[in-house]
Image (tube, rainbow, N blue to C red):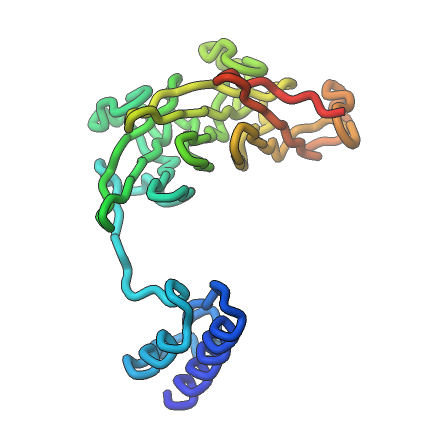
Length: 271
């Protein structure tokens, strides 16, 4: 035990000293991250060690305490709350891709679990160091097995949520959500917040939607640009804006870039 404590303290002290010398917020790894495999069951630094590390570290490098423990407003078994998370400023989005309610849109009925594994996203905000749930989000076309909340990406007052196993055969932006003839094609949903109220801004699909492509397996947003991946898209195109319809490379995958202008999203043509 004493050997582990000495090793861990030396590593933390070294990082803290480096941060102090550089004058920047150098990342300090967790205790588990720096312990060897043989020492993982050991306890963390004692109070005296932490006091020395914090004294050597720039402000904010070493957190004082856990700030909050968050759960869904409708916690239930196997909902997978926390399977995806994104934070921006004082706002946090958490996905629960196997949540079961049949609600649609914002702050609907969480109690009717007739849409198994439809998925949900929970928005939390922080004020004065206190976290509260701000919104409960569902897809505009909630259906069982869609896994809404599979991935989330938050930037300011805009949130993108994906439903990896959504089934519509729509293409592009704001297409027909009701024709489920493209099983597991996937979709992404854009939400925006105004004066603390969330609303859906867009419903996004691939330009070459096909069953099994799983558009929305991953997503990321920055400003007015978002990118969505389709892990199992099949075209043999190479580079940018190639032939989308030739499915000769099974599960080769693709990425789609969308941009927003004056609140309107469109797939960007890259040249």
